Length: 93
Image (cartoon, rainbow, N blue to C red; front, side):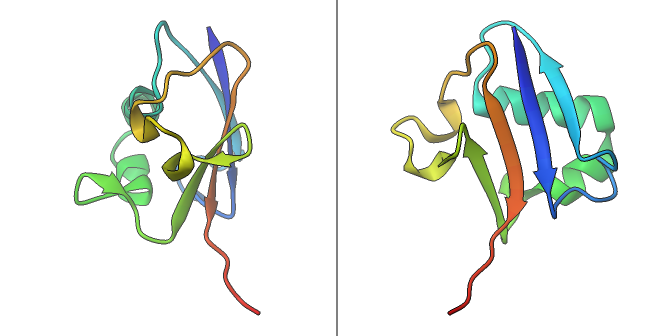
């Protein structure tokens, strides 16, 4: 299965092109993050993770929904053609 990954304002050093495709069987969101770190190395780990979790200030969207709002959160299974977006959290008013 193939899952599209896009970075918007995030991962500027490790994912310079701003997008990639991850292939795998039975991928979860957590498994996808592990695949990104294996593929892109320590720079990706540094930009993406902090203390074993997603780096503060980043949001992870699965098909437009924040992973933290999904029932299974980081254990959410991914499907063929899903899109995962890593972006910075923007606040204001």
